[in-house]
Image (cartoon, rainbow, N blue to C red; front, side, top):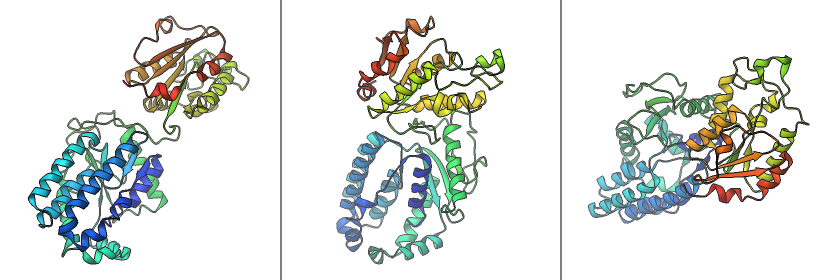
Length: 411
């Protein structure tokens, strides 16, 4: 409290296109009573916080990535424990609370990673005084100091997930530049998580990996002793809100090739230029109509030709194309693919299958398919194969499929 966590959480949610989830709304109903008669309300308030926050969390996390402004383990390891140690909650009530907490955590699980807002006690007390909430006058003696000390011990012994910290006394997160740097740090944590990280980083206070500008790394995001939870949404601007379809189709075989250079036929060639798809191209027109048909069902779309590559006008390195396409496939909710002979579409489909994505595959007689793609049938788990004669038939064919229902088919 007073560390700046709410401001930080809102900035992160906005910068990453995640949803900010506040616990303040349902805590307000208990806090005045809790500190007016702490022994009477401590157990009931903590159970209420746990139940309501869990219900809200489980509802929100089903549809989006979220930023929660207070971790669940704080409720258990700090506040419930504080009330028990200060004898505002008896042993029986405390043990009952812990039993409830452990059962709830079976469904909630640990966070993908936790950011600890480090702040000097003097600064915290100043900020709390400025807020001047009425119930603060009823805080138990040394309440802020005692809770502060518990936080210090808590985060130093924390090992439930990846852990980072930000010095909120030194970093003014209201500064747009600092906000941008922090978001960049978090994106780097997420996007580089498949790389091997140093597993022997120091966890001494104030130390950590220096590859981030504002974040200080205490427990790496992908260290072997941490079970990584896949993040459904990354922050980069080409990632769409839930639910979204990644729509793959041949590119270089239909593009106007630049300078007649045969090397440009390959999307991942080191040369980088691979032609443009003009507005009157049949595949482009089909994709634009397909885009409309899918969005009419309430499903967002990501067409890499358009959203990543601007129909070939944007010059990207092979590494950029690979990284952005793979990231987009990893985070999509359904994969829609028109194969042709495109090696890129084949790779993207393989990655989608490996990630357990529902896939809708389209065979079009107007575009000759590869030998292997003709062998894919719709009898696989969550794979639907559609057959059409002409490109112009594709949007109408997709319109007859309930894509949202298809997305929700269980694994």
